[in-house]
Length: 150
Image (cartoon, rainbow, N blue to C red; front, side, top):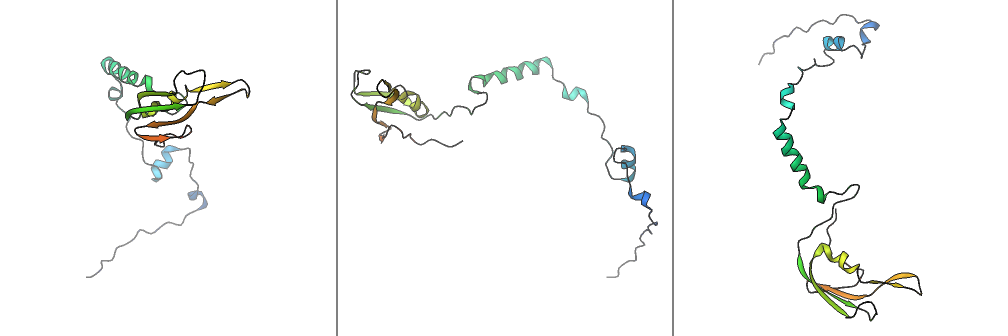
């Protein structure tokens, strides 16, 4: 295959003035092809909402209001429902040594936090839980069932 001879444009000798471009002058930059020309302005009728659309958006924002938390991560909800059996040490605060309830997995921490007692001698709270079982598996007071990360 023969290659066609293509004439290339001859570049004019450049001066120092040709290298300097005022970056604040948009017209000059568009003329030199450094910056693309400005686009046509947006049609405002496309970007404005009718009163009906505004009402729908407000109602959609309010749906998640209870589940949103300012400056914190949202509460994890794990819908695994099973029997929680808590065995306690002998104490004066609770009459029975074993308590049983049915709860979701994310509620375990709240339920176990109720089984603490103020120790007057050491001036701190002490855990009254010996062990607890959830969904047939036994845990120590400081352990929690599977909890997903972020």
